[in-house]
Image (cartoon, rainbow, N blue to C red):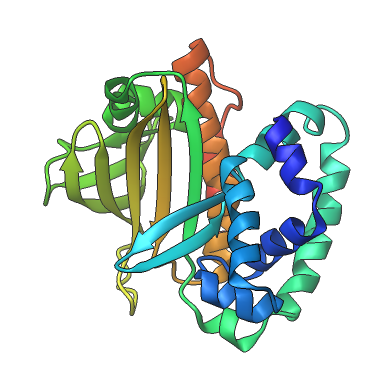
Length: 263
């Protein structure tokens, strides 16, 4: 937590985070252009943000794309804000976000959004993989059961556990490399064909010192509304997963409601 506060204390680093929040997935060159900053200075600041877990780097060929990672800020919110005056703060935040939507630039409005979230879990890679693919475990931390044989090419379903049998999300398993990498398509159960195809979620499970680093990348999102929804939903779902594996308990009863609120 000290590294997070240290990183946020610098106005230049906050400016970098603001820029990534407005337009995520930028290269170093793009960040330098928009902020009129030398590459060396930007690299140093991004290194500090990366060490604090506030920025995640995803490689695409020769490019390094930088994404804002809200996990550390979400932990601050859980520790110091959620138990106090959260309803009023959420209302104020909603008003602010609506104003920001009107100010969105053409570039941001037409780009295909991508969301990246990183969390660290005190568990083994095999335990994390099982939590991602076991229907009973997903039902505990997601309030939905993720059902599939998890073989490449197979279908998967996101089923409610209220006895109705309703399926809210369907998809296909693109890749499965236990216990390290799972790639799935992610679409609503109405089966409407989207021009750019369904969105794609990649779970990357990597050893990090004595714990596990779980990176979730949600790509090819159809619009900014869905990006806003999953930006609330993934932190809730993954916080529940982390808490379940580390303590045996979940934090919130129905994260799917937040996940789907803007989808």
